[in-house]
Image 1 (cartoon, rainbow, N blue to C red):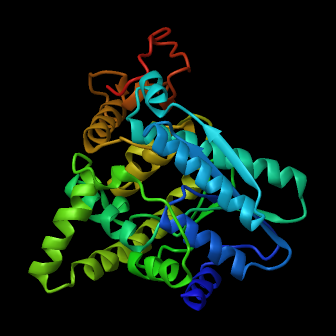
Image 2: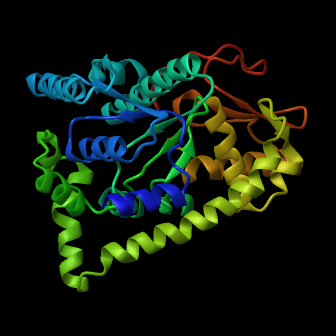
Length: 349
C-alpha cells in the first residue's frame, strides 16, 4: 500500500519535496492512515502539521476525538493545530446547512494554518492534504447522479485543486479503497476513532453507503463501483478541457462581462463561465439549472431588445444583472444602483 500511495502521489505531483503539509485530521481511519503514510514517505526537508476541527456536534464524542488526535500527534512528534466551533450555530447564522457550514469553516482553518506555515518557511511549498478515499469518490458520484448533477459534478472529488487561499488541496488516498486502509491499520495495530454519525441512516450519504451501493453491487455482479469510477475519470477529462476554455474568458474579470459576448457563447461554456464567476465571489455551491435558465433568459432579453427584468437572483442573495450592456455579477454586500441597497437574509432563496 505504501508503494502504491507513493506512485499515486508522484504521478499527480501531490506532495512537495520541501516545505510543509497541512493534514486535515479527524481521528478516523482514513486521516490516521494518511498521517502514518506521510511520516513514513516524506522527505527530510518536508514537515507535517495536523489540523483538527472540533465541530461540537457530538458532545463528549467530539471532545474525545480532539483528545485522541492531540495525544496521537504528541506521541508522533507532529505539530498540532486546533479549532473549536459550534457548527450548528454557524449554520444558523449563515443560512447554510450544518454540513456545509462545517466544511466552510474547516477549509478556512486549513488555509489559515497553511498561510502561517508559508510565512514562517518561505523557501518551501505548502499544501493541504485530505484523506478522501476511493469509496468516498464512488459515493460522491452516485449521490450527485441521484441529485441531478451537471457533467462537472460527475467528475466527483478532484485529486488536486487550488484552494481559496491559493494552496493546493490534495488527496493522496483517492485511489485507495477503504478496505486497504483498514487492513493497513489492522496489520500495524494502529488505533483510530469511529464517528457514530456515519451509521445514522437519516443522512443521504450514509444510506447510499450502507444500503444502496451494496444492493447495486449485488445486482450488477460487482461492477457498479468500477463503472462509477470510470464515469468520474471521463467527466474529469471533460471538466479539465472546459477549464482551459473558460479560464481565458475571465482574464481581467472584475464583476462584469459584456452581455452580448456572454450570450453568444455555447451554453456549455456560458454556464461554466457564470458558475466560475460566482465562485470567485464566494458562491461555490447550490447554483442549479433553474438559476442558469433564468440567466439565459435575462441575457437573451438584454441582447435582443425584449422587455423583461434587469436582474436575476442566485442563491444566498447573489445576483446577475444587466447594466449598460454588461452582465454584472454581485455578491450580497455589493450595492445595486438600479435597485438600491438590498436587505439580505443570509439564507438561500
